[in-house]
Image 1 (cartoon, rainbow, N blue to C red):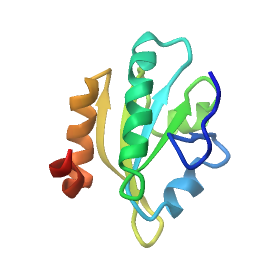
Image 2 (image 1 turned 90 degrees about the vertical axis):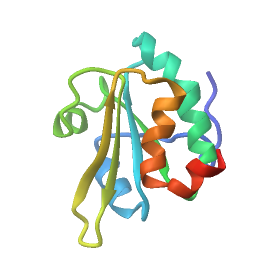
Image 3 (image 1 turned 120 degrees about the horizontal axis):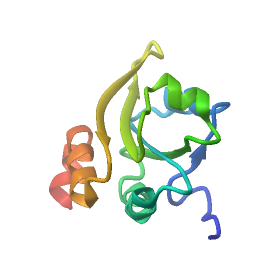
Image 4 (image 1 turned 180 degrees about the horizontal axis):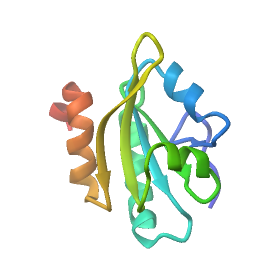
Length: 125
């Protein structure tokens, strides 16, 4: 699999850049916690990439490999994968969880999550 340019798709974050990325996003951040060996994660991946492009500028969509980024996974209580969490930092930099889905809910499930934080986009879809 080849990487897309940074402007497209969902960038992969690490323990080193996760917090700063979420705090400076200026919009909700949808985080796909996954592992390369996870079957349902592989089903979710193309949908996550599609939504990352579709919601660009409204919701930042990122990916975190739980095997390579243990600290972030533990901090956010990731017990099973795939888990998708929507986070947003307030103006003081405090990160709040807005929504969470554990397991693979399909494209409709992810769109439902995104509709809560970007309702104008949900109507257009």
